[in-house]
Image 1 (cartoon, helix red, strand yellow):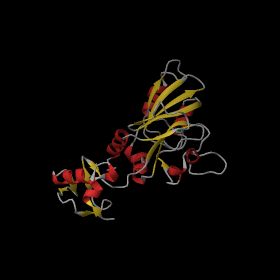
Image 2 (tube, protein in one colour):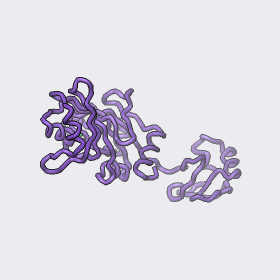
Image 3 (cartoon, helix red, strand yellow):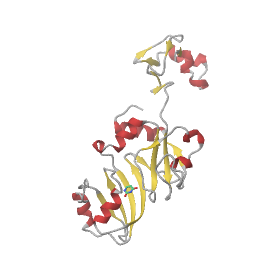
Image 4 (cartoon, helix red, strand yellow):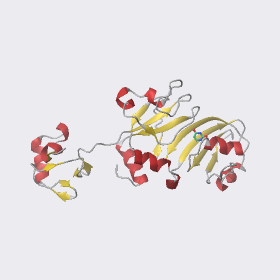
Length: 240
Ligand code: URA
């Protein structure tokens, strides 16, 4: 939808129209890469790229949330029996039909990235992009020094060979950090099972550049900061 450039540059009241016009005349606003000094120019911010102070104006921005998923909650839209991440969102977000960029099992906890940007989800979960995911795992018996090179070599899981993964054994051995670059069904549990260990607790701490906010209690969520958004779009080479 077209609108006047000075109205758009006022960003719904962040600047007065007069301030917006001054910025436009000073050459601080570009339309599709060209400086536009006409305050009354008509632009369509959905179709054209209108930029001021390095920020695109008026474009609908994807929603990006991080949630600290509790155990017992499904990574699914709605289930009818078990609670899902959708059930933990207020209506304002629930109605957007957000998808998770990488599922967690029902009993797994931690970082879920929820968004309405399908391209971003695709890049994060596509094996081609090898996005690293970091997990904290508690085991039924201690991991040993032999497990580290076995994870690094790529474990044979029967139907496929897992890509090399980085295992760090934490003091005591019954807790580990493991970084993987693929996300097949029950991947981390199956990798430990291949080494004779059962995962008793699994928490995702990181997806690529995005780290679970330690201040988010289980079941809580928040919007990503500008910095977190930027880092994810840079990582996936998408313009967000
Ligand atoms: N690996 C698993 O086994 N489960 C998850 O939920 C995520 C990774």
